[in-house]
Image (tube, rainbow, N blue to C red; front, side, top):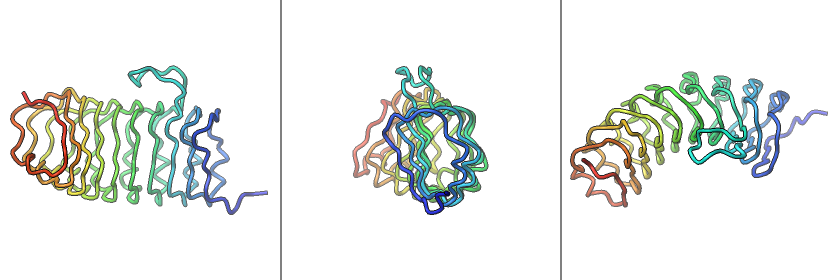
Length: 245
């Protein structure tokens, strides 16, 4: 008997173990798949790409135990590279792969295919590479978390295309360079976390003052310098930041 009508699987917050079965690709009617907060391991099966009706995919927090740096693995979670097969899920609205041991770079095919994504969270993995300039294609994004990885390079100017963005978390990486002035176009932004990027430098652009909804800004433990722009003091929300050298 096949589960031809199954649309929602929600097994969050259990102690389920083992790998994701390849047969999951047979559940072609699925729109919601939540397996967060378990103890799953192994790689994400390529058969997941068959779930073309999927709107929400949650596989986060499948690490049983990690050390305090979130880098050294004690007990395995989901491993392997970020799979390009996810780009087949063109209806996807939310993707949460946070707190696993996924590695490699974010596939370029995600940017061309996942244009309906509103929330993307790959934080607390071991992802490398830079933030692609193609990120600016994902104009529906409201939440983007790349925090606590090993992402390098600079913040692309195309981030200014993400005008629906409410939360941006790029903290705890090895991002370098300065903050582009295009950040000022993110008129919906309320949270901006870029702390603990030791190679981030330069001064905050004056355009920061255009973020009238901003409630939290954190650039602590970076190498930012210069004066705080006067425009910041026109912001109606609260803020926290590092002391500029």
